[in-house]
Length: 412
Image 1 (cartoon, rainbow, N blue to C red):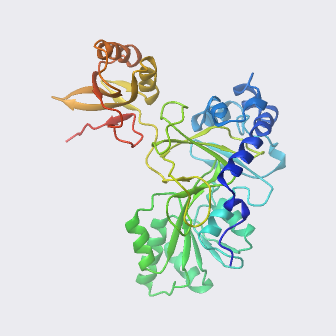
Image 2 (cartoon, rainbow, N blue to C red; image 1 turned 120 degrees about the vertical axis):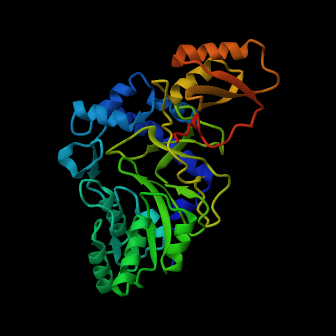
Image 3 (tube, rainbow, N blue to C red; image 1 turned 90 degrees about the horizontal axis):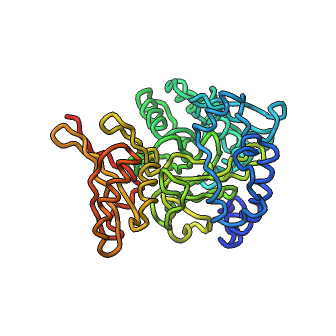
């Protein structure tokens, strides 16, 4: 039994980076020519010059809100799809609504790699409890399983008694769905006195998998791994048997940026996950997931050499309301940009005597200039239309959790 899905997983990191960056200019030019939205967003960009991480980081971000806004005015895909609707295999909808295309090719969402890493092998029956209704989740995992040569029982969500009955009779070995629903199924099997012991492994996603739940499921006989995927991008990263971080998919260029900006953070620093996926049908470039994570050092002990991330570490949209005014991470970034002496900043929102207060904590090397605090407070007033205290701290003293705005108010 092979330990890896293909030889790409064992490439030298430098070879992988070179291959991805060499493919990038043609991908960007294809998006500009075939996807009208990118024709407008990347107007004037020399695609042939985008051959480095630095050049990629200079391109604009695309957010889910951009998809929703453009789709409302230019259905069905807002000009982001590069393949005509008539040539697609399926169309799905996620909350928003945001419509997603699926092209007629094998393993369109690239989930076979994650399923293989979780232990699925040819001929095994998969019990798939992700939704087949509106959203692509069910088909995302089914297409990967079929690419591995595995039959799939399309269970869908809910109806735990019927789920148990199907497992007891069909005897699948592999579960796909959320970890919490797997726990519900196992509880229902105990209640009904049904034998679902055929389930031995699974790939879970769609929600957090705390160590306690993973251990609990293992104690009940099901070893699960998790993957990170979205309806827009397909597979982003996945776990292997090493269970040391999540390994980035081979077709993904991943960046971690400071929330509220498109600027890459230092290695190991927490920030927002940005993905460029080499999908010619839906060529999303610098797509902002809204999820927080960080790159890990080194490579996985399992032998896969791609970059690893720490998994989901919260949401990047830390927008909050202070004294009736919304404050956004991008505004904090704008203040810091005016004052290069501030290496890093964190706006803490608290309440004192039933009054909201803001404190901007800034890392500054050495002794800050006397007038810096007053100047930064003025910048906060201009950008946010609110007052803030300025507190200086030593470099490296602010928490590495990706928070640009930390709302610590309590409402008791």
